[in-house]
Length: 137
Image (cartoon, rainbow, N blue to C red):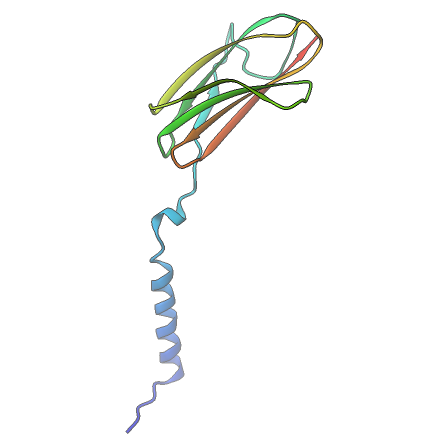
């Protein structure tokens, strides 16, 4: 003799099975991919935001990078003049969870724009990037 389950029982079983399967996802798939934390040092003597500066000015930019989720792996600083392609001016592998780097910049002897981009990467490939745009007069 064949036994048939009521439709509501079958639907309930499918719903429970679906919930169980969806809760079995790997934890990594739910990872929000939090990039490293980055902040410019502010205060006297530091350039920490877009600014209008003179030709051949000597400026100091300092950045602090902190691990948020995964170990830090690198810091890259690139520069771009008047909107042209960027060029790396500093690149370093990082093996700590907290990293501070001060970068001295001497502006060109001509008017225009100079953009400095600071990019940090962690072990999972998460990237954070901040830029400072200098208008040289």
